[in-house]
Amino acid sequence: MTSIDVRAYNPARDGAAVYALWQRSLGQAWPLDRSELAAVIGDALVAFVGGRLAGAAAVARAGRCASLQLLLVDPDLRRKGIGRRLHDAALDQLARLGAQSVSLGGTPGPYLWPGLPADLAEARAILERRGWTFGYTCWDLVQELADYETPADVARRGSTFTYRWATGADRDRLAAFEALHFPSGRRTSTATRSRPRSSPSTTTARSSDR
Image (cartoon, rainbow, N blue to C red; front, side, top):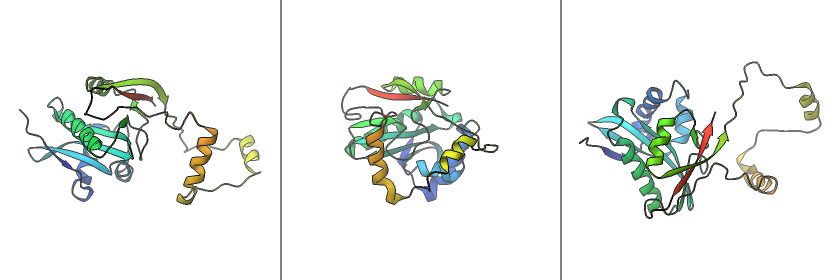
Protein backbone atom coordinates (compact mmCIF):
# COMPACT_ATOMS: atom_id res chain seq x y z
CA MET A 1 0.00 0.00 0.00
CA THR A 2 1.34 3.45 -0.98
CA SER A 3 2.38 5.63 1.99
CA ILE A 4 0.97 9.13 1.37
CA ASP A 5 2.00 12.16 3.41
CA VAL A 6 -0.51 15.04 3.18
CA ARG A 7 0.34 18.43 4.64
CA ALA A 8 -0.40 22.13 4.20
CA TYR A 9 0.95 23.84 1.10
CA ASN A 10 3.80 26.30 1.63
CA PRO A 11 4.33 28.49 -1.46
CA ALA A 12 7.98 29.20 -0.69
CA ARG A 13 8.78 25.54 -0.22
CA ASP A 14 6.31 23.87 -2.59
CA GLY A 15 5.48 26.49 -5.25
CA ALA A 16 8.04 25.46 -7.86
CA ALA A 17 7.25 21.76 -7.49
CA VAL A 18 3.48 22.32 -7.75
CA TYR A 19 3.95 24.41 -10.90
CA ALA A 20 6.14 21.68 -12.40
CA LEU A 21 3.39 19.19 -11.55
CA TRP A 22 0.84 21.38 -13.34
CA GLN A 23 3.08 21.52 -16.39
CA ARG A 24 3.38 17.72 -16.50
CA SER A 25 -0.31 17.12 -15.88
CA LEU A 26 -2.29 19.82 -17.66
CA GLY A 27 0.19 22.40 -18.88
CA GLN A 28 0.04 21.42 -22.54
CA ALA A 29 -3.75 21.66 -22.78
CA TRP A 30 -4.11 24.51 -20.27
CA PRO A 31 -0.95 26.68 -20.39
CA LEU A 32 -0.50 28.96 -17.38
CA ASP A 33 2.42 30.91 -16.07
CA ARG A 34 3.45 30.38 -12.47
CA SER A 35 1.82 33.57 -11.18
CA GLU A 36 -1.57 32.59 -12.66
CA LEU A 37 -1.47 29.22 -10.96
CA ALA A 38 -0.24 30.78 -7.70
CA ALA A 39 -3.28 33.09 -7.66
CA VAL A 40 -5.55 30.03 -7.39
CA ILE A 41 -3.41 27.91 -5.08
CA GLY A 42 -3.52 29.96 -1.91
CA ASP A 43 -5.08 27.62 0.63
CA ALA A 44 -3.99 24.16 -0.44
CA LEU A 45 -2.80 20.72 0.58
CA VAL A 46 0.05 18.79 -0.99
CA ALA A 47 0.70 15.06 -1.01
CA PHE A 48 4.10 13.38 -1.02
CA VAL A 49 5.04 9.79 -1.76
CA GLY A 50 8.58 8.77 -0.88
CA GLY A 51 9.59 12.42 -0.57
CA ARG A 52 8.28 13.22 -4.07
CA LEU A 53 5.44 15.66 -4.68
CA ALA A 54 2.56 13.50 -5.87
CA GLY A 55 -0.45 15.83 -5.87
CA ALA A 56 -2.11 19.03 -4.71
CA ALA A 57 -5.62 20.18 -3.79
CA ALA A 58 -6.59 23.85 -3.56
CA VAL A 59 -9.67 25.19 -1.76
CA ALA A 60 -11.30 28.54 -1.10
CA ARG A 61 -13.85 29.53 1.52
CA ALA A 62 -16.09 32.50 2.31
CA GLY A 63 -18.23 31.93 5.38
CA ARG A 64 -20.34 28.81 4.90
CA CYS A 65 -19.61 28.56 1.16
CA ALA A 66 -16.48 26.90 -0.18
CA SER A 67 -15.00 25.51 -3.36
CA LEU A 68 -12.58 22.80 -4.41
CA GLN A 69 -10.56 24.79 -6.94
CA LEU A 70 -8.03 22.20 -8.03
CA LEU A 71 -7.26 18.53 -7.55
CA LEU A 72 -4.05 17.48 -9.27
CA VAL A 73 -2.16 14.17 -9.21
CA ASP A 74 1.14 13.30 -10.88
CA PRO A 75 0.35 11.30 -14.06
CA ASP A 76 2.97 8.68 -13.08
CA LEU A 77 1.40 8.15 -9.64
CA ARG A 78 -2.30 7.93 -10.42
CA ARG A 79 -4.59 5.10 -9.27
CA LYS A 80 -2.70 4.80 -5.99
CA GLY A 81 -5.26 6.56 -3.78
CA ILE A 82 -3.47 9.93 -3.80
CA GLY A 83 -6.34 11.90 -5.34
CA ARG A 84 -8.81 10.31 -2.94
CA ARG A 85 -6.66 11.21 0.07
CA LEU A 86 -6.31 14.81 -1.09
CA HIS A 87 -10.00 15.11 -1.97
CA ASP A 88 -11.17 13.80 1.39
CA ALA A 89 -8.59 15.80 3.36
CA ALA A 90 -9.64 19.00 1.57
CA LEU A 91 -13.34 18.46 2.31
CA ASP A 92 -12.57 17.50 5.90
CA GLN A 93 -10.65 20.74 6.32
CA LEU A 94 -13.51 22.80 4.87
CA ALA A 95 -16.02 21.08 7.15
CA ARG A 96 -13.89 21.79 10.22
CA LEU A 97 -13.78 25.45 9.23
CA GLY A 98 -17.58 25.61 9.07
CA ALA A 99 -18.30 25.26 5.34
CA GLN A 100 -21.78 23.89 4.63
CA SER A 101 -21.79 23.93 0.83
CA VAL A 102 -19.01 23.22 -1.64
CA SER A 103 -18.68 23.98 -5.34
CA LEU A 104 -16.34 22.36 -7.81
CA GLY A 105 -14.44 25.37 -9.10
CA GLY A 106 -16.07 28.78 -9.37
CA THR A 107 -16.59 31.16 -6.49
CA PRO A 108 -15.67 31.88 -3.75
CA GLY A 109 -12.10 32.86 -4.49
CA PRO A 110 -10.03 32.93 -7.70
CA TYR A 111 -10.57 29.89 -9.90
CA LEU A 112 -9.35 28.26 -13.11
CA TRP A 113 -12.72 26.97 -14.33
CA PRO A 114 -16.39 27.44 -13.32
CA GLY A 115 -16.74 23.68 -12.90
CA LEU A 116 -14.85 20.92 -14.72
CA PRO A 117 -13.62 21.14 -18.34
CA ALA A 118 -15.57 18.78 -20.57
CA ASP A 119 -12.39 17.24 -21.94
CA LEU A 120 -11.45 15.86 -18.51
CA ALA A 121 -13.87 12.94 -18.71
CA GLU A 122 -11.72 10.66 -16.56
CA ALA A 123 -11.67 13.25 -13.79
CA ARG A 124 -15.44 13.56 -13.97
CA ALA A 125 -15.89 9.81 -13.52
CA ILE A 126 -13.59 9.88 -10.48
CA LEU A 127 -15.45 12.79 -8.92
CA GLU A 128 -18.81 11.14 -9.51
CA ARG A 129 -17.55 8.12 -7.60
CA ARG A 130 -16.67 10.48 -4.75
CA GLY A 131 -20.26 11.74 -4.59
CA TRP A 132 -20.34 14.72 -6.94
CA THR A 133 -23.39 15.10 -9.20
CA PHE A 134 -22.92 17.25 -12.29
CA GLY A 135 -25.53 19.74 -13.45
CA TYR A 136 -25.80 21.92 -16.53
CA THR A 137 -23.02 22.94 -18.92
CA CYS A 138 -21.39 26.33 -18.29
CA TRP A 139 -19.71 27.75 -21.38
CA ASP A 140 -16.34 29.35 -20.68
CA LEU A 141 -15.84 31.85 -23.51
CA VAL A 142 -12.35 32.53 -24.89
CA GLN A 143 -11.28 35.21 -27.38
CA GLU A 144 -7.87 35.48 -29.02
CA LEU A 145 -6.74 39.12 -28.85
CA ALA A 146 -3.57 39.08 -30.97
CA ASP A 147 -5.40 40.34 -34.10
CA TYR A 148 -8.53 41.70 -32.44
CA GLU A 149 -9.97 45.02 -33.57
CA THR A 150 -12.91 46.72 -31.88
CA PRO A 151 -15.91 46.70 -34.26
CA ALA A 152 -16.63 50.17 -35.61
CA ASP A 153 -20.17 50.37 -34.23
CA VAL A 154 -18.94 49.36 -30.77
CA ALA A 155 -16.20 52.00 -30.93
CA ARG A 156 -18.79 54.65 -31.85
CA ARG A 157 -21.05 53.71 -28.95
CA GLY A 158 -18.06 53.66 -26.61
CA SER A 159 -17.26 57.28 -27.41
CA THR A 160 -20.33 58.39 -25.47
CA PHE A 161 -19.09 57.19 -22.06
CA THR A 162 -15.91 56.83 -20.08
CA TYR A 163 -14.48 53.62 -18.64
CA ARG A 164 -11.52 52.47 -16.56
CA TRP A 165 -10.17 49.38 -14.85
CA ALA A 166 -12.05 48.52 -11.67
CA THR A 167 -10.30 48.76 -8.32
CA GLY A 168 -10.95 47.33 -4.88
CA ALA A 169 -12.85 50.50 -4.00
CA ASP A 170 -15.48 49.56 -6.62
CA ARG A 171 -16.24 46.14 -5.13
CA ASP A 172 -19.41 47.05 -3.19
CA ARG A 173 -20.94 49.02 -6.07
CA LEU A 174 -20.14 46.23 -8.54
CA ALA A 175 -21.73 43.66 -6.24
CA ALA A 176 -24.84 45.82 -5.91
CA PHE A 177 -25.00 46.29 -9.70
CA GLU A 178 -24.70 42.53 -10.26
CA ALA A 179 -27.38 41.74 -7.68
CA LEU A 180 -29.76 44.27 -9.26
CA HIS A 181 -29.32 43.40 -12.93
CA PHE A 182 -28.20 39.73 -12.85
CA PRO A 183 -29.88 38.24 -9.77
CA SER A 184 -30.09 34.71 -11.18
CA GLY A 185 -26.53 34.61 -12.45
CA ARG A 186 -24.55 35.31 -9.33
CA ARG A 187 -23.85 31.68 -8.44
CA THR A 188 -24.24 29.84 -11.72
CA SER A 189 -21.08 27.77 -11.14
CA THR A 190 -21.93 26.82 -7.57
CA ALA A 191 -22.50 23.28 -6.41
CA THR A 192 -23.99 22.44 -3.06
CA ARG A 193 -23.05 19.84 -0.53
CA SER A 194 -24.48 20.12 2.95
CA ARG A 195 -21.96 19.53 5.69
CA PRO A 196 -19.01 18.18 3.67
CA ARG A 197 -17.94 14.72 4.87
CA SER A 198 -20.32 14.77 7.83
CA SER A 199 -23.53 13.56 6.16
CA PRO A 200 -24.48 11.41 3.16
CA SER A 201 -26.05 14.32 1.33
CA THR A 202 -25.33 14.76 -2.38
CA THR A 203 -22.81 17.13 -3.88
CA THR A 204 -23.61 18.75 -7.19
CA ALA A 205 -21.11 20.31 -9.55
CA ARG A 206 -21.19 22.32 -12.71
CA SER A 207 -19.67 21.08 -15.96
CA SER A 208 -17.59 23.55 -17.98
CA ASP A 209 -16.93 23.44 -21.73
CA ARG A 210 -14.24 25.58 -23.23
